[in-house]
Length: 77
Image 1 (cartoon, helix red, strand yellow):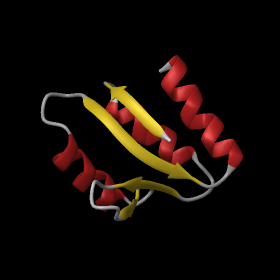
Image 2: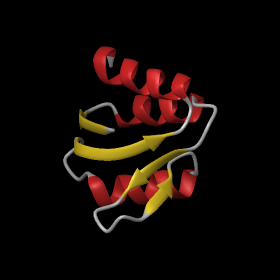
Image 3: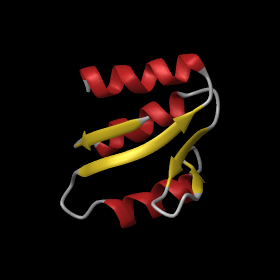
Image 4: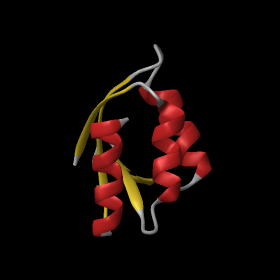
């Protein structure tokens, strides 16, 4: 799924941490980074945003309830 215009980075990663299954960031090269890993979170933050906003990410969640959590975050913030 594509997620866009993430302005609350901390809340986004709290939502990812609350997921039960694997949540991955798909890079432009097709690599997949485990977003539940703190190291991957720091790397993705450093690479993807410099002005406090992440414009667009492609993420993959494998559990239906995790997908719902991420959608809820995108809709309700």
